Image 1 (cartoon, rainbow, N blue to C red):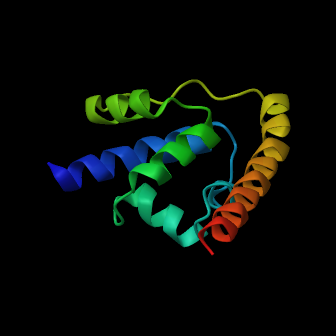
Image 2: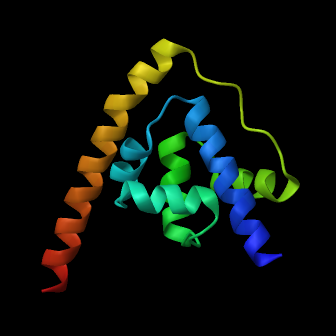
Image 3: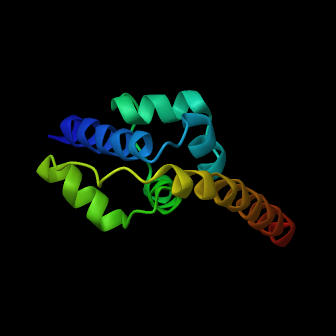
Length: 112
């Protein structure tokens, strides 16, 4: 069941990402992973950590609890976003990545 859960969750996140026109590279940048890690998560080859699931869901406009529930149920992704919404989402993902970089820098300074 555990491996099946990760495969279902990864497949669900991939379906949502693709339906929203978000590239693996953009999602990876937003959640501070490599594109390869995103591919592995989506394929269920790599287990997703809770903080990464939350960040990915926020970047995709999903509620993490709902995404987990839909993955467990084998549910479908929400309807694709219109092209202009996808175009507006791309800069927001870049901003999210910048904000996460700033938070990481602050946390590093705070721990010194």
